Length: 406
Ligand SMILES: Nc1ncnc2c1ncn2[C@@H]1O[C@H](COP(=O)(O)OP(=O)(O)OP(=O)(O)O)[C@@H](O)[C@H]1O
Ligand SMILES: C[C@@](O)(CCOP(=O)(O)OP(=O)(O)O)CC(=O)O
Image 1 (cartoon, rainbow, N blue to C red):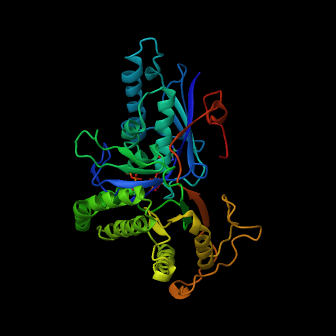
Image 2 (tube, rainbow, N blue to C red):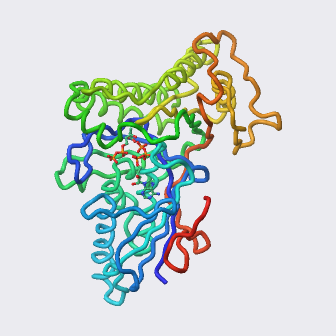
Image 3 (cartoon, rainbow, N blue to C red):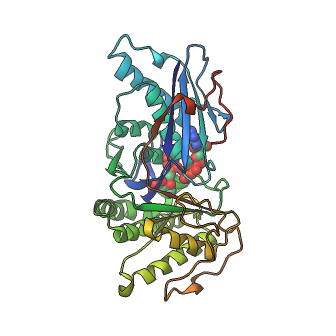
């Protein structure tokens, strides 16, 4: 049986991708950089199988069949992977099975809400690309595979690697230089933790794809960002990562999130992704950093917020501060759900009510009603796609998806 299963992680950008210069090939107007999150907590798991009995390419997402539109993103990724199988394996070794001529069945599950601004398209297309690469026994390194994942969803190209990953915009019309490269592995700076504040887990109003095109067409600020802001930030944040300088990393990450939302506001008609809860989280983290920046407290930032195309916050912080940050967020945004404590930070009494550093101005935000922040997910920087065994397959013997709760 020709079958392979992989899991792939989510990534959350510190320097945001927003805008395409080629919408078909998915070539961006600027480079971007992200942190890959640990797939022990958030992942897409995908099984691909090729079989002579299959009559068309089929894909099931969370158990529901998706239409693979001819010429669409999914069809492009599958066709490109078959092309690589033929070029790199079958044309080289004539005894290799001609899998590129067979139809595939693909099943994928996300263990978190799909299309809710939690970057499911990134982990999803990375897992799809990685599972077909395993099925086809491709010798291609992750940077080469990132060219294919990019054509599924731009941000997906950065999920093919762990740690800290840049997507170089490239300049060629063919797109062959628009790929992801690892700036540093997760082992270089494992101290980076992330707290996802789920403000909403429902589908967003303006998709990233349509929103960013509207920005390209109408925002003068985007042109300034592309030419004069992002190139310098890419350089400085890469240096901060290599030097493990969290203060600098945090400063750039927050500034870039804010500029991304500023170009959304500069779009006509304007796009609003953050809401009042998102802005209140910003106020709390800014106050937390204001106190941390006082000379008597060490003079360095201790947390960085960032927001994608939705209201959910991702807060990056060194491991040593994350417990304090969780308590802080839970104070202003009381939790309904029991906090799942994957790192065992809190005892049996749970998060508690939180305490504040001396000088912290509690009036920067009100105490919100329970559920304003629906849940908190604590994770950290993690590795790239993993090839799993037969036991983890999400396709059954019959070639149809297993119904699993992953
Ligand atoms: N596991 C998966 N396998 C294949 N495709 C997936 C998978 N998960 C999500 N997708 C694709 O991604 C789409 C959702 O992407 P969308 O950009 O709307 O949401 P998001 O990725 O959660 O948000 P964002 O990219 O803005 O953070 C799905 O409709 C599906 O086409
Ligand atoms: C705000 C972002 O998350 C935008 C992600 O956009 P997508 O990668 O979802 O867009 P498409 O390429 O059209 O699929 C910023 C980022 O991840 O860099």
